[in-house]
Image (tube, rainbow, N blue to C red; front, side, top):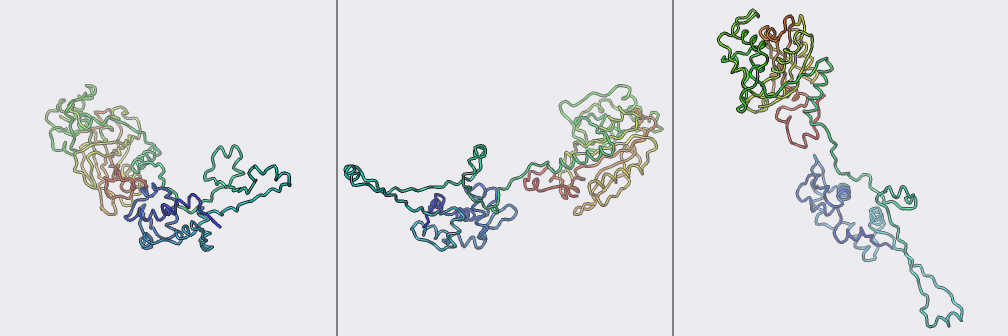
Length: 439
């Protein structure tokens, strides 16, 4: 004979966990909500075994069998009722109930009768006769092995509950780096591996370093090559030493010693002092060249720049620039294109092309285009050889400087296999958990 365990009695009263799950899933639910249910692991395991549920893309929903089973009494539920009524179900159901620890064998009553002598019977006539003693031993099963059980050695004398190793475990998400940050860090490591040093500069910049030191004329249409965001308060910053400012002023107005005619007109110190959010990483390159002079070197920067663009799948108002400069003698356009192709290949760009372009601070100048599978050819950045009008005022007398500024976000789109740059800053947890770099 068998009787219900405490767990069996609970299921008889409140329903099987898998049947409770079916009622919860009358509408599709995310797995994150399902695992919050009491005894969710047991419910999911038996519901899947009975083909009652379907789990797809982290969503749990009822199968046709599950929908049918909601209002039908299962053979397991019938068996629980039979045990409660002291009748015995078939052997197959006994095995299932036992495996789930819902029943246990009823212990027989052990009767011990002591024989007494004639005189003992006389003496105990006024005492209660010793009768049947019932001995029932309940074996407690351990569901969790604790440090105390291990230390004491008590675990050797205890019985452990059986576990269903095929039951689904709760979904856990290990910590990982945000995909775009991971890409930036890898790009930084690659450039350092190619011998580049990292340079830094302020986000709030003066027009002097953002434009004037780069031979971008004041009050001229060429100044509009980059739209900028002006600061209202404070609106002006400090200029560098007067000697450097004088050289830049002379170069703009008449070419100074650069064999150039300059831009003509009068150069305004007040205009150069205006504060803006830097519009390109080349402002940092100008500061670095003024300190480095002619010493051979390779520098890079991956940092934020700002432009008042219209936000769409290809543009953001603030984004990251991958700025690079190589300082040395006898450098040519071929060297520059070689560096750019090397950088493009490291992020998986299979098709790259260049076309001539114009920038006030480089000559010759090119734009680099990368072919995206669904967006076609997209401009990834500009590059060129720094003009003498930039280099000589900054103190470079004999060196050439290769320079480029790449939209690191657009390069990341290739590596991450996305076609909308806004996804780089997405708060979609599913995307953040599952997205990885395309190798």
